[in-house]
Image (cartoon, rainbow, N blue to C red; front, side, top):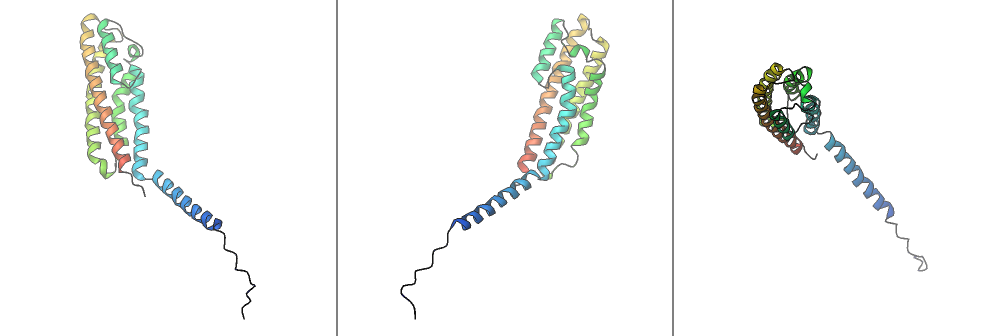
Amino acid sequence: MANTTDSPKPRASRAPLLINIALVVGAIGIFLAWRHARDPRRLWAKRVDETHQRYIDTALRRCFGSTDSAEIRRVADAVRGGTLPRPFNECHRGPMAELLVAPNSFIESIQNPPLEVYRLRERERSSLMRLTASARLLEQDVSHAAGNPSAERREPLASKLEELAVAVQQERSAFDDLVRAARDAATLF
């Protein structure tokens, strides 16, 4: 017989259940964050970005003090005015050679891209070739001027700097699109 004086069993606390649910959700979140960071497309974009900074940006800074095309245009205006601003006045030797070699060195680093960015890689390659051609034309005028261009050489040198500024701007745009597309193609899982 059942004893009517038996008290009902105490209700189990919900706290351990809520803690277990929170732990499972946290573990899933950690796994997704870990997997998201290890996405091959994201890793490729990071590696390409670091390599671009090492080769292209460093070479541009050594010759022009900046990676911005507007700064290169300011250098062209200064050359037209008769002065060679630093560091461009020291660019006619080693730094110019680095600027000529940098695009080819960088091209090697963008091999085997994710399939989603293959066309953008080809666009980046063609913009790097235009950058190389502009730098080569500039190098010829800079080497003839040897750090001190005569009055008749200033205008051709400034126009070559303007062409290089356009090539730098196009390359930067193509590169930014390439990296953005690779990061956007990265999956959540």
